Amino acid sequence: MRLQKADEMELSINFKSMRLSWVFGNIALFIWLTLAFIKNGEFPLILFTIISLQNVIFFGSKLYMTRKMSNDEK
Image (tube, rainbow, N blue to C red; front, side, top):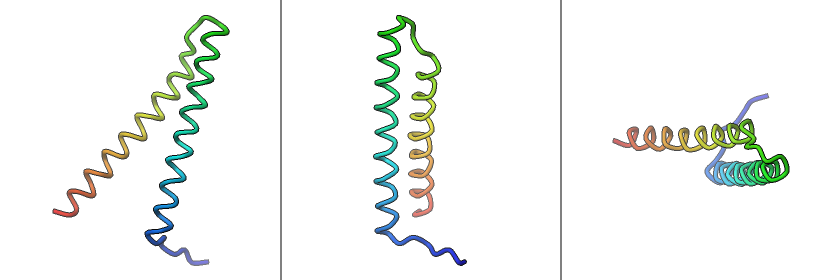
């Protein structure tokens, strides 16, 4: 089986899907964090760490790829 490169439309659809799943994950984890904090009265460090790492990876990779693409054009 031979893999084909994705065309621009397929890439666009994949990126939008990933963004939507990232937003859903962030919102779900934030709601879970908020409800756990209200219920237990303690700050759930594990949930906060997951949300933070997810955002650091997302924005860090976005920054890296943007810089890489802009340097390739020069």
